[in-house]
Image (cartoon, rainbow, N blue to C red):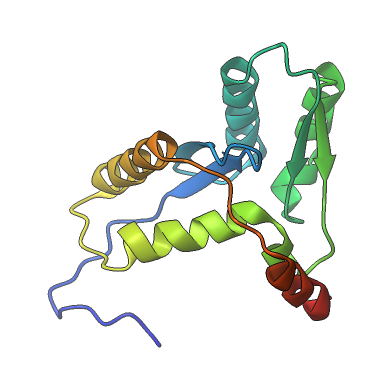
Length: 154
């Protein structure tokens, strides 16, 4: 169902959220950017590289098939950072990526009503939600029933 807004509503623009989700502890790292280009994605990867302890020698990233994730600049960055390993699930299988589940929670809990005065407030609200989430983060409780439902969709 489309979002309904007041007749005075004025769109202030859009932000792009890059987020990473640790499935073991459910911690989220996220940054917002004005654009969704290779430079911004690389900046996010640099943020992850600095934020995740060097003692973790392999970081597996599940990424959708967005061209930004596969560009020449990103591939060059990846060669210089061997602890990062990219995985791309099949097209139209975003539900297999658990960060998509988290995006759905963010949407329901903080973004359902578009009442932001500007993009800065939107970014602040997303950053606050990430901080709140990380305070109480815990692994999703996957049951054998839920696993069977996922496999059935395959």
